[in-house]
Length: 591
Image (cartoon, rainbow, N blue to C red; front, side, top):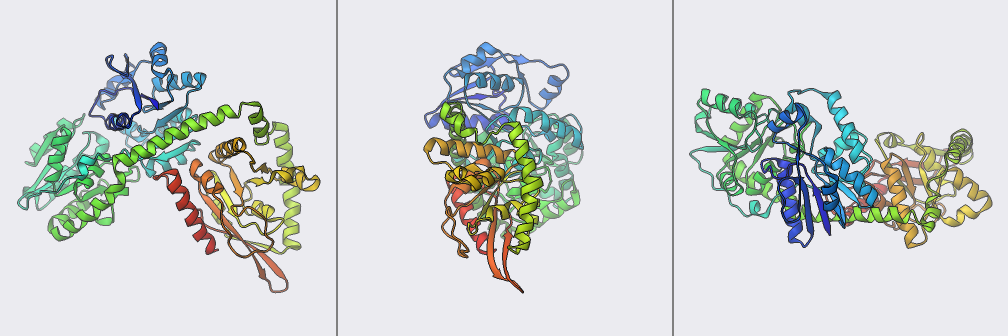
């Protein structure tokens, strides 16, 4: 593939976002891909330099955080993206927005990474509690990210934050990844000195001052040596506190080789940051063989790396941090045991695996773009029309559904079929779209699923022949059904169209068993379509099982709704589909 990375400050090697981009680009090139870079800098092979953009006040504040902005130049951007297979936006600033518009006009697919956490911005300007401003920034970024088919989130934490803020794109969780060199190390710590390392920019949100205060308060203060690899605006403050309290602290940016040497000699890694999208520095330390101690902050992804509470402390709580540090100093045998556990745990964060997932996301982005072009052909338009009805038809269908069909069918199901619903609360717990699956055992089980998920109106899937039948055709249209595909082209458009609906918050109902088998109480073999749709869209499966039982006076139909089963966003699509299918079958068997 020919891939274009758009990143404003590629030459700033102390910035975590830039370091991650460099690693990805290097690996992609080794795999044979052509990677172009659009950024500030000087001309070079596959490097398209832009001038720096100076924004009054903002640029001065941003530079303190090691951030600069590029000035978009249409001519240079067009040169960079010419004949590209896909463009990947690393930063959400003006150059990325202009590049997206140009790519859209040229029909070039675009993906992006979400590395700029709004809380990092507000902390950087001195606002520690800025909920409304953070919300505004999330909404501002959504104007770009919301237009893309796929967005790379470095952790489940930030993926959940994006979903909370109603991002309707497919979010792929891909770790920033740890280079193999960090895994091929052996710890070499000393018993005479307890060496603590904490890597990160010297910034307010990284909160190194809490660690310094904890060491100063510890009874082992004179035994502890602290290394703080990094640089940043809070350096003078941290150095002043360390000097004033006679703490043994080493400051300064370290090369990768020096960082590894430092980590191998460490006894404990402490991560005190309030805000963190992933904290690859922490997983690097774990890969080397260091037990971590992490601030359990609600706005940080780093707590995901803790195996248990021994590796967590209350954020900003100096006394709790002192207690945990002293626990690890006093329990060397337990620490040695945990080193082995953490090294095994860190294997899933290897950089090569992250590149596998990243390549898959890019290929999915290219395919989604092809599907969009396919939907613009005559045959594509004809099939897609059944998913995109005209406003008048939508309104009439919705009114008939909610005011006529659902009330009448609800009365019929309760009075004549004695239908009882259980655990409908599981539908109400879903924030966004989902794929509903159920066993296919009654002519009206589609209606039962519609009533179970009320007030949402699920998109039902039905065989194309049903649309041609006089009575059945009327009802499947009224229930908002869409035709199951019969050709390869229709299949591609089917998943593309339904994927868009689920990402917009709609429920889609699928019968994974396929054919109707009246009053069958067994779970039959599931086809893969529902699970592919859920994984591609990043939405959960809601399993529903319909039983036929003996009531007190007459037979009863029980519609039992299970808990949502979520896809694993940190693995390949194929593995995620298999895992989701197995977990769903297991859940269905309990209903």
